[in-house]
Image 1 (cartoon, rainbow, N blue to C red):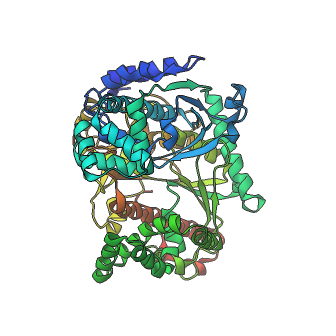
Image 2: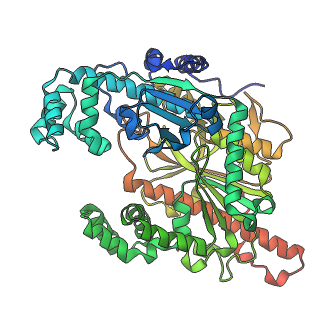
Image 3: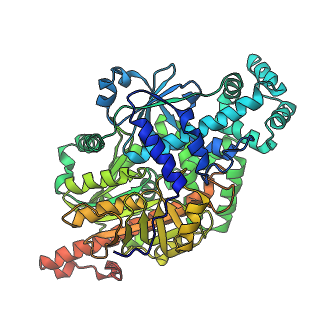
Length: 598
């Protein structure tokens, strides 16, 4: 079959991947230093200064946020899919190791308290993420080691550590000079490393980083065992009262907060406490923003602001606030399912017929009439979006185990090649670098479904997206070739989800290196990506900044669009059931879904 999209993976990227996969086949730990040259040679857009003697602070920040704090002590990283992988290799006490986390990457990681990390992976994409992140971190660590080991700044660092005090302004300036960095970059490292700032610099000054890596298992069977164990755990926690095997299901891939915030109304009922919190804890900028929003009389912005503050509030106020939210969630049939075994992936199951219209965000209420959806037997199954190929494995598992799949809706971050941070992109073509397929599909969302709820950015529909292999596994040549072909949206889960969708309605495995038509899928399919990165702007990568409050706007605009679509679709489904049962008097045509895409 002729292809409209040529194979576009950079040769340097492919060489890098072949190198680390071949090395990981070894039964003995490999030295990460072996990968440094091929890592630098690929010219990653996320590590554009890899070869420079000067530190690449954006890359170091990016890597630091995706690794646990204990990485400064780590010498050996073990990779496995399930507990049995570690036990069979002699790490019988892996369950007793300390559970550690990283703020920028959700992954199950255990630390033995000395020098070894155990990392649980859900798919091959975790390897494509973890290996470049560790390699980049080590490269940047060793740059700082060379610059710090004989510097005057090292004496200041050791002195401040001994005296248990922060660096003075002049010491910060000296440190920036010795590292050949702008002072704001050094300040940014101090924020990211927090209380470990001085101890990390001291370790960097005193020793080179020499990480080793060992793959304990990597078979497709083990990945499937991992997802099977995850699903069994989900159903076990739900119990027999909510058996999903005979339920109609709307599947959503998003996050663990946006849907629940929109459905519970908890932030609005806690508004007085949230405002008192930002005033009391010195969040002056936030309080000023709240006052400005209140004076503008814009309920949309006020609600989004409250959702943003709520996350901080729940983290600071502790158990009492979280217990109150949990009680409200259970009142309206929201079940949180934490991951207890294997990889780290939280799920939420929401019983549609228990939702309270008076608690809903005001932007949703017109989709539910006074009687709500009381007669619905459907559930919304939301997962904290997985990484790369894990999406394929997880949706496959869910498709096999639920009664009926009514819709697949994916919300996620992406890089934009033609827009700005905060824009929303709606693709109807996705080229998948995993399968080399180009998927053509009817996205159930259009610009008018999102634009009314977006304040700051633009909505770009009819876009073409690329599902990349990893955040580091991209370079300017890779992106420019795609851009010339009209691809403007780079993300990591779309292709694997579409491969699973193909298998959910076709009697065979998804193909490879083909143009695949998915227009006849018998359930809703919707993808919404909001831009968090502009990689064509040189030096402005994911480590250069944060979405912060600005990221709330596209997050909730897309979440609202998804929930409105689900409510409208479910209303139509219930009305059709009424028609089939001959109860035409109960039909509510005013809420019938816009059927333009079906």
